[in-house]
Length: 76
Image 1 (cartoon, rainbow, N blue to C red):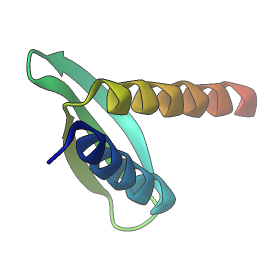
Image 2: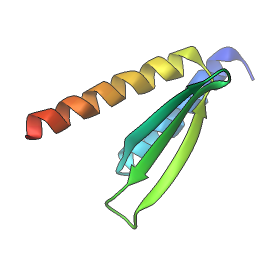
Image 3: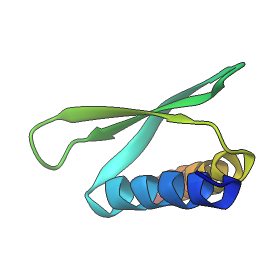
């Protein structure tokens, strides 16, 4: 799989989770990539974990996480 394909695959998985009502609840950086944990509180509480290996996927996830945090702060 090419480098661009890896990014696109990871991005699409992230987008699918976010559109499905999942929120980012934790992240942990490792030498292999970032481990990101998502939780869906709308439907039966369910968690999903992803390993993001591509640098652009990690940047994309970080942007979404910051936006999520800003929405939470604005709600208070």
